[in-house]
Amino acid sequence: MARRHGAPPRRRGGQQPVLADLADNEPTALTGPAAAEAEQRISEFAHRTALEGQVVTDEARLKRIMARHDPKVYPGTFVTCVYNPDRALCRPRHRLGSGTTPELADCQPLACRNTALTADNRMALTEHAAELGTALAHGDLLAPYVRHRLAEQHQQALAFLSRHSPEPT
Image 1: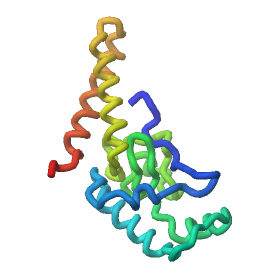
Image 2: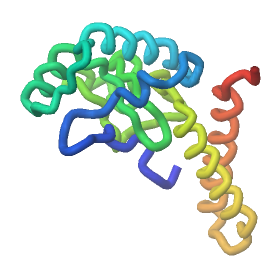
Image 3: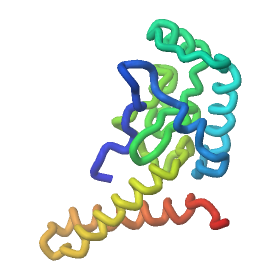
Image 4: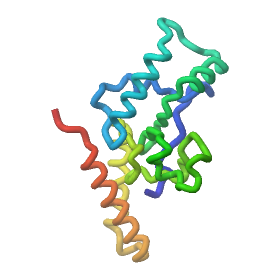
């Protein structure tokens, strides 16, 4: 894909990543290889950090909560990373112990087993595949290698989406 695959977690007012959007989704809203694990982690995070009727606005307190109970779920534009270093393709074997977060610059979401998709992720991937299709429609203007790479990316994105689309109800 031409764009960055996983964007950094969304933030509100400079605070920690907002996982409430994921936690509020219906249980079937996540698809992909790591969907079940993401739902379990988010549910556990919500249970552990339930602050009955309270809103945490203190940034230091938010950092402590995240340090203690971080579910290691990173919402992005094209995918949601459910980080497990043992399965991460963004972290080569020789660097496995070197960090506790994904290397978003090296993200390979269409092949990684840490990938979960929200409805927004699926929409972004679908739009990207359509953009690739449009570029390929004018393929005679592209260099052969570029056309080949775009065709590969287009096919991979469509195949990934077809494998991980929710079942119609």
